[in-house]
Length: 330
Image 1 (tube, rainbow, N blue to C red):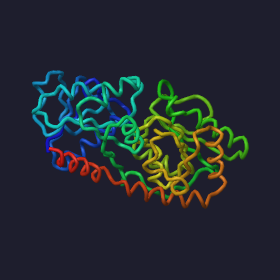
Image 2: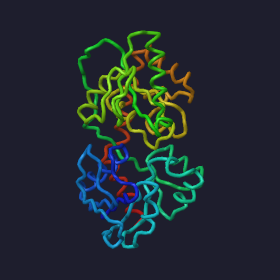
Image 3: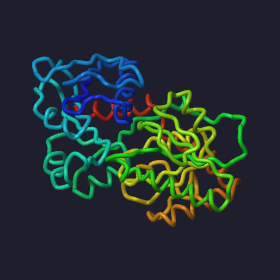
Image 4: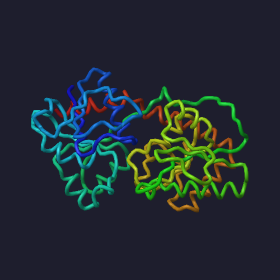
């Protein structure tokens, strides 16, 4: 199959969304498919190599023939819709509720009403589209099951380690780093032997964080997650939230929230792979404390957490689902 990922007006940078697209494209090419990225700017992503052809042009004449062209972000939808028919089926892989791009009313008129086949990457987004009376198919990106896995690591400290994602700026209000910090401060003050490890795309923050990794490599993530006793995920506006799932791949349980777009509904099962807290800070802290005090519960949840991610499948498993679904439409 010939596949175009349309990144025009979206681009590639050092972020989780670009990483997902690049890994998806690389896997599809390894599977024997022809894959192209159409863009109107240089590739600014440096975390992993892009192995497929990257065509930089705004001119439709330079777009190759294909079986399907896939919009990768809200701002690429109009470009995808206007692409020549020879580019194949017009699809939008919706991976977030991008209110930082458009207000909800405009999302409906500009994005959901656009004549594209809708794919979503999570249960939360499927429910969101259903609320607005649009059908969609869940296609997840899959997981690097051979890169992140449980590993016995000799601790340099006897402290209990909390983990979380550090974000500041425009996305902090949806990632809610301050909830992680408030939970840590509460438990630290009450019990003493608590450390906080975080990673993120921002520069090293000042303050209470005991260990911060800026843009960790896969090896650094493996070490990082395997030292974490409990991952905190208070995010409220995600598609499929990756860091909690990555923590679970190493056998680490998660405390999340019941927000509609927490991004964890696909894998965080309350009482099984972690705890789904009411979306209030006090309840979130209380549930983190509950798991802090019960090591047996954490261990049991951690084992089931890894199994749940395995159930959702590898990147190749999920890209096969993408191909089979598109093949059924063309």
